[in-house]
Length: 328
Ligand SMILES: O=C[C@H](O)COP(=O)(O)O
Image 1 (cartoon, rainbow, N blue to C red):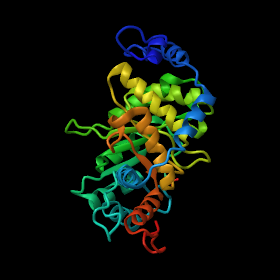
Image 2: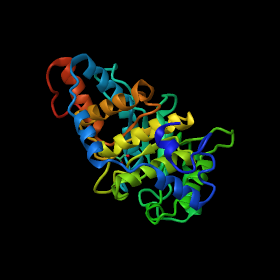
Image 3: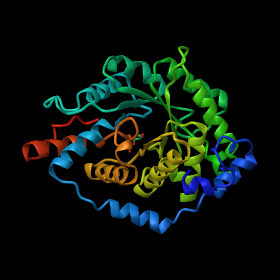
Image 4: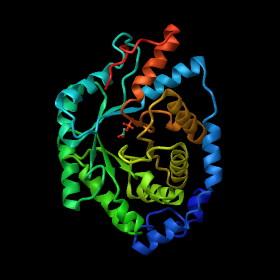
């Protein structure tokens, strides 16, 4: 067991199974986690962000980043046509260069899952759906579970749920824990398989780094397959320090339990330079074990365009004209 988990009250001996036995045990555990050293965290994230990646390594990293994208459209004005063209772009990001990799997933609202599923059939690209009254998370459980069930029934491979920040910030941790468990149950399909569950914290609303660490552990103990920073719908979305903190949490969680959980920073990641910073953080914090789309994703609507432009620059030595990448 890692020092972090071992030092936490309630995490004695063989694991974390009894941590959520009651509101009191869960609170004791989460508030017993070591406080985050804000200065240290921010300075480590900044230092890692200065590493430069060049030539062959850069070309490799760009393709890796493309393959890790959850290409996203989450707008009230989404149409079947827009989702179909986003799927076409995810399938063949650069029609002039078939060596460009496919993205990991297309991320849409539940009512667009069937359209995306149909457009991506046989491609291996996953269909991710937001659920649980995204982005606010403000609805009763029956509505959240119905939202999840609708997406799963339509064929979603992955569910991106949002936690109830009101409950979390009020200290109602067991409620948040049980909600995640219930949504995980709703991810099950009749054949016994299940959609992967990503849990969004909306870190821009969690107020402190300590809360991000607590949300990470709470969510992983509840059974999340991925932890995700943000909806992309609030003022502060993914940041390097918050993502670094979450990377450290999944590392410590695996050391404590043997279970590997993925990480998805989302919102506001738009440039190749940003993506490279995140990949350096994953490599330095977690190593090869997480450097794959199975364990690390970028939730992004426009990052792909910049990666494609940089990719072409590396190939041809010049930037393409404005028509080279399709405008989303
Ligand atoms: O999960 C993904 C985000 O909603 C996308 O945010 P973005 O438009 O800032 O890239």
